[in-house]
Length: 454
Image 1 (tube, rainbow, N blue to C red):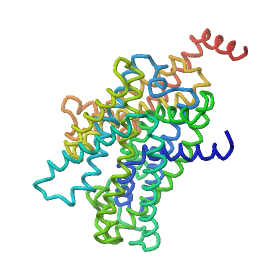
Image 2 (image 1 turned 135 degrees about the vertical axis):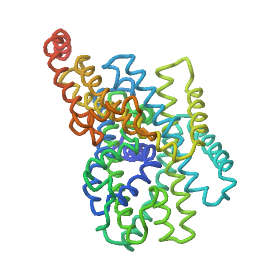
Image 3 (image 1 turned 90 degrees about the vertical axis):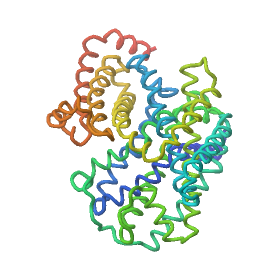
Image 4 (image 1 turned 45 degrees about the horizontal axis):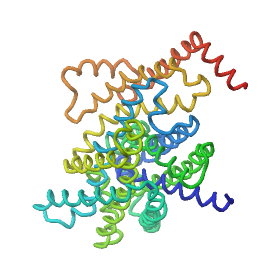
């Protein structure tokens, strides 16, 4: 393979990765952050970039350095049963329960709903989502089509449309960056930005998408031992591009306060901004832009769900799992965007800490050889705190049976009131697990050392 072909493949794969995870949340939440953070936009953006760009990149590296094929392999050192449960929960979260239906719901609310009468919204959503997921199924049924459709056609078009909006905002600024700060960002803008990065679901998605990208890399002619390097290289470029666009979208949201009030959500804010620059044409422009963004993500989510589930539960074919996720997403999408976003938050507060510690354990695997003592100590020390963080963020409010427990948790555990109470238990688990590894895992360490020596 020539250097020119290698460069082309790197760009194509980076575009594939970017196109699969830069979707509805990635477009909407940075704009919303910009409006809410106001003058604190820089600090908030730094926190957002950690969970929005650094964590997804580290997830790619975690898969690469451990030669994992997907989520199951990353979580397996804890226990096979835990890996299976985590895989199912992760794919349900970013798949038919929240992530995938959010793509169709967002596309409809910003791309189709403005053109429909109010009494036709329900039926319109049903028809739109049926067409949306039927097309996603058709293009995803053959895995080799992913590189062609996402990397070569849809993603470049989406990027071109988005860059036009950002350039207009730079050339014709709507206002200064010194704007009022909303209450949620007045106290701890960095940590609030960090938590808001959960909403993009990218840290979870990259663990899941890795298996899809592995198929794409192998399809381009690379051998098994070359896959980790290509994943790391293409993942770095895609995440870098996303970070630049995030900064631009946050700038867009903050500067828009010179003309508009804080919108109910980032989607509404983005539509107002585009309409300001392009008039009535902006409504159509926004619809095309958002639909392209979320459709590429929907394809990636559907494919990764079917691939991972088929590999873990092979009795059902790839095509069958693909039908399950597209039909399930169709049903959930019709619950409405507001309900999807509201109920996703407590689930993400549970799943993200577990994903973060699994990524960290994979990146540090060479120091403890993925010992069960370390992996189990960290994960099972993190889990109770993550469950309490999840319970505290339910849209219905704290459950009465857990109210006192959550209150005590917030008062006694550092950072718990900020939604980050799992950090200290995870560190304690790492220390305890390392001690157990050094005391009781000598046989495993000796066997590994002998293998490496040979």
